[in-house]
Amino acid sequence: MLCRNCEEKATGVEPHRNSAIKFHMQRLSPAEQAVVEAVDPAPMLAQVQTWSALNTGSANLPGLAEQARLLADAFAALPGEVRLVDPAPVSAIAADGTTFEREHGRHLVLSVRPRAEQRFLLTGHMDTVFPADHPFKHQTWLDEMTLNGPGVADMKGGIAVILAALTAFEASPAASSTGYDVLVNSDEETGSLSSAALIAELARGKAAALTYEPSALPDGTLAGARAGSGNYSLVVHGRSAHAGRNPQDGRNAIVAAATLALGLKALERYGLSVNPARIEGGSANNVVPDLAVLRFNVRPREAALANLFEIEIRDLIARIESEHEVSIHRHGGVSRPPKPIDPAAARLFDLVERSSADLGQPIGRKATGGVCDGNNIAACGVPVVDTMGVRGGAIHSPDEYLIVPSLAERARLSALVLHRLATGAPL
Image (cartoon, rainbow, N blue to C red; front, side, top):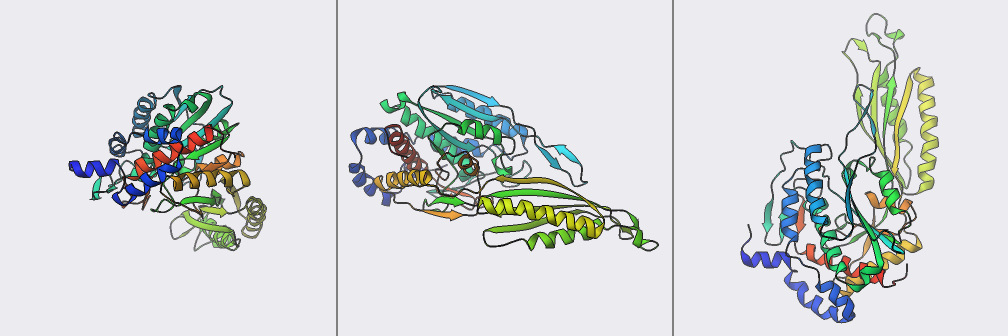
């Protein structure tokens, strides 16, 4: 628990930023000042702490179901319809090379004024990378402004920002002629495979999108251009034989998989990274192994490189099959397309950066190799800024932390951006 003084600091702004915000608020119109001041930081920290205390690893279906219920109750305070959408089927490859269906939680969707001429999309995710049995379960105050805990930055803090920003925006007259959808999916950390079609459906026809991943750096820097990402499993079937009596009759799947891994790494070039991550399979030492599963990830920075890789991997597989007399089944592909900054996206970034500066919090952007649902949205032709969430760091680790005053800070930024979009900011 925080002392009263710490609670006041945690729900407001850092002291050194307070005077700057008051000074720069003079740059806002009266209507903009009203929407910014309508942000209520009081409930935000408690929301994050409640949600963080609930484990929502991507495979923890009971935890995700309870989180979805809590979020449905919270977002019901906004106008519109809240619904939970079943995940699309997703297949995966087991360690024995067989295909199975991977289960996912349901996705939350809020639709507000669906018939409005101008509509926006706001997205977040409820899942974390920490499975139900992970020891990182508790929150710790690192200092009076910094909270360590699972998902506090990535991205339960971001969900609280969405809710606070929209609540303030709804108090503005500009909201009445503007519509939006909110998506909080349950599988972002595993690639959004069960929500990809839903993302595309909700992105269709939107003027702009905001996604609430934490900032790229603790100072609030936004992620700009992003590489794409693809996860693959290659199932290699060889032929078993005795390693001493007749090894020449066998076809070693492990050796073929190792050769594949080396061949994949050789496909790397500027703008395309390839990471062979795991080889599973094998047999006893006196048996020529007839099965191996090679798993790897690719990160293309341009669509042309992703397309070229598809050609090259087909050629590589065909060559290894011929040379090693094995069969290879490929599963997976590039599920997050590269996200360049096109002119419309650049204008949206300019609006966000200008709005943040007008609030006394200058920020910039930097390209990153990380991926998120912003990649999927951009591939639909919708301009998106996808690090509108809180400031923090060390995500995906037990050191993950949230800079608590950024809850209110980023909610005010989003409320202002939404108001400016709704009142005619050009894109």
